Length: 226
Image (tube, rainbow, N blue to C red; front, side, top):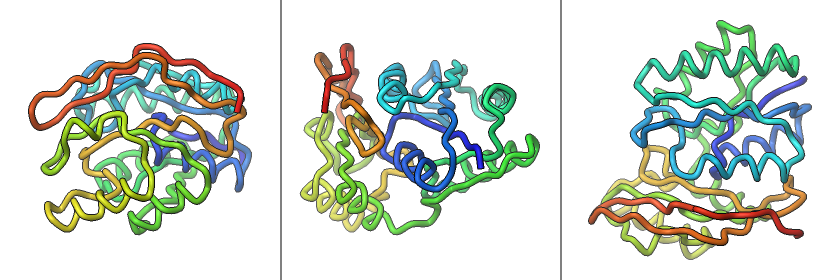
């Protein structure tokens, strides 16, 4: 089946794209770039870097800006998916949804309206299993935002490794943080994975910290040979 992946550049959507490429014919990536950081649906920090990731995957990308206003942003998603369907003849959409009923229900509804199959291969997966699978399969991931009790500025730009996974599980035990960061507790950026022909190198970045939350702004990055 010809499919697209709803793609933010983070660990979940990239893993969904990885699975899509293994199971179906991945034709393109669909990315929504919100103009505000409190979007209910879409990843905010460093969306521009998805262009590098798309190039590393050798895939075309439908990249659309959205105001990021609750519910209204769904109209922008519908337009982007309509364009992907028309341009690349896709029949289904892969998403990296883990546990957000809000997001999944709306994506399912839009796919139904567009006669697309909605495929969420990570839905309700155990967070630890998912995180360990990322590492086992060679995903190189950094944290780009955090906004929950227990996190500090040191998490920004931190590489997701087994020690970081252990600490995320500990934060879940102590504070109820979703270890997979599904509740908006954090966001990530994938620098390398098996379906990249090159890897992303962050050249310049700066941290924005507000006392209890913050994000890593990547100002310069490039693709380099693996």
